[in-house]
Amino acid sequence: MSSIGSPTGAAPTDTGRAAATARGHLFNAGSLGRYRDVLARGVDRVARRVGEVDTPFTGVTPDELAPLIGGIDLDRPLGDTDAALDELHDVWLRDAVWFHHPRYLAHLNCPVVIPALLGEAVLSAVNSSLDTWDQSAGATLMERRLIEWTAGRIGLGPTADGVFTSGGTQSNLQAMLLAREEAYRRAVGGAATRPDRPQVLSRLRVITSAAGHFSVQKAAKLLGLAADAVLTVPTDASRRMRADELARTIDRCHRDGEVVMAVVATAGTTDFGSIDPLPEIADICADAGVWMHVDAAYGCGLLVSPTRRHLLDGIERATSVTVDYHKSFFQPVSSSALLVRDGRSLRHATWHADYLNPARAVEQGIPNQVDKSIQTTRRFDACKLWLTLRIMGPDAVGELFDQVVDLAAQAWRRLDADPRFEVAAQSQLSTVVFRYRPPGLAPDLADEANLHARDALAASGAALVAGTKVDGAHHLKLTLLNPETTVDDVAHVLDLIADHAAWYARTATAAELSCPVG
Ligand SMILES: *Cc1c(COP(=O)(O)O)cnc(C)c1O
Image (cartoon, rainbow, N blue to C red; front, side, top):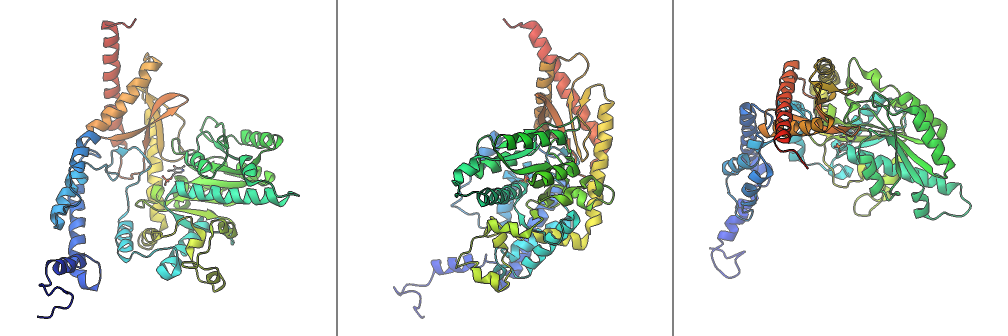
């Protein structure tokens, strides 16, 4: 027996066998049998669990799950796919939060379409990385086509460009980065002596509405702007940015020597589904020469709506747009993009590295997406949207979104007519903000009762709703993104909420009567 690879002359052995076994897990032409088998088992587990679940949640608590997960020795593998899937079931699948369930009505999580799940499986096996052409080939060009397609749906014009991102937060951050650099360039351009950069940055302001997304504040912080850089404009009765207040705020900034770096309009606010008055905002931004960013993380589904595209009128005048396909295109997390009117503005995210994307690649016309992105290694999330469009088509996606917008309108009318509840402004999209507030219930008690109702409902697992504050008062929120949810589902959940809240109000009142404070 040869002793090659075994300099001591000992048998080639356990380490050798272990290495061969480890290599057997690698995905390649030699392991296709295992690939098919293992993935099929995973798909089967998910299918079995989804077939069983009859509530969106089990109500499990962190205290119940933490010991289970903490007790697993990650240095001692189970060695067997089925055993690992059994364990995965116990620590996750059994108690997962299921967005496909018709009574999951909480956050902006959509049920996902099967073509996108196919895309997810394929993209992670091939594992293209979208930073450079030489790690992705066709995937880069497919992403570019989808960017072009989205920009076309928005109407951004011939110089538009963009890039896929990990989510709306990153899209907004990148938009603010580009806007900051443009504002800085302009500020420096006019000056006789080169101003101090921190000094210029400290004068930059971003204006959004009081109902805008918190990622705008976060972006300002990450970008080194002043602590008070984000100014929030009041909203009207429908929770849309007041254009007159926006104009006033811009004037005030200019009077105070501040530089308005960007206005962030929201097309679909997270709580109210309100769409800011885009045409008016576009006029004001054009007059003031200000970057207009439209955060359409939620409202982007309207881009494919067969009946409601007009609600986004004015978006075509934006300087940049955030879209979250994982919010309203029924795509799995993550799938998002930033679009810009002028592709050249993406250069602010460019840095050339000899080992990755040398400047000469640009001259050679090699399409390296990293030149447009704040990420380097990047998933081919676009594959999911690609297969969705190629299998279902955009109209089918838009019809699904239309259905949930219709459902929200029905749910709103129902709540408005129900004396147990008070309802906030009607959403233009698919949220319903409301609270339990029957006649005679004191405001403080109503606050507590609504908080309790949400928690009790979640603990029961029967349904999930979200919570928020409206003008200081605790409210509940339905985010309707599931076309399978019916008005009867909504009515049933409202009854559950009313029961929990009424129980709380009764119990608290009784306790107060039997044990008066002070
Ligand atoms: C969800 C949301 C975001 C953030 O998107 P993520 O994908 O969660 O990062 C930004 N803006 C609005 C209006 C949103 O609703």
